[in-house]
Length: 84
Image 1 (spheres, rainbow, N blue to C red):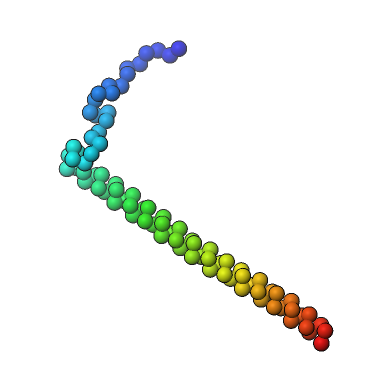
Image 2 (tube, one colour):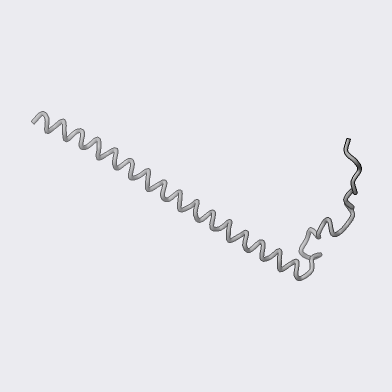
């Protein structure tokens, strides 16, 4: 077994910062707000990118369907021309 090291003080306020903004200092509140703001912007950017990807995928699917329809039409035209 390993040797006994110093156990962390689980009652220390340094080990566990305040859980609510009301208990935090003004500086800590500012840091929290900045972190939340940055996180929100990043999250919003991710959602924006995902939405754009969905639009691209939808447009891509439409183009594929149009290509398949054109291929089918060309195939039918070739049959008509061969018979003619």
